[in-house]
Amino acid sequence: QVQLVESGGGLVQAGGSLRLSCAASGLTFSYYAMGWFRQAPGKEREFVAAISRSAITTTYTDSVKGRFAISRDNTKNTVYLQMNSLKPEDTAVYYCARDRRGLRRGLGLATTLDEYDYWGQGTQVTVSS
Picture 1 (cartoon, helix red, strand yellow):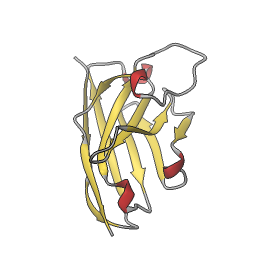
Picture 2 (cartoon, one colour):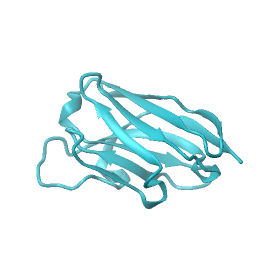
Picture 3 (spheres, one colour):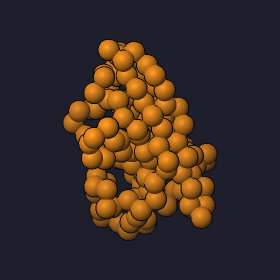
Picture 4 (cartoon, helix red, strand yellow):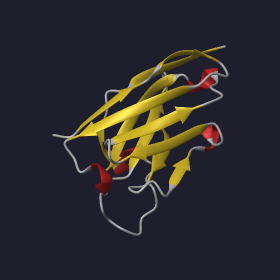
């Protein structure tokens, strides 16, 4: 079965950095675009970033552009989220997820929750001011 396991969260001061990892198993990793989402207390889960199967294309929500970078290593079945210049408003549980569309071509990167089918358990990121 498909499993996604996030790691790398923690407590950091504003302006600091963290690197999240998401290790995937039970799937042909290179067949799927991947995404990161986050959910703050009392708020809905929101899109953060996505990366194409070959890592050629990425997309970000406006609030993290220029600060976060998504990447992947298909030899390690892992997707990463490098987070720099962290702000208190970045505090949330961060989730990685698999784009359900697989090898379908001609589609842009998915940015909505219903376009993803498997999710990790999440990793907590807390940014103190």
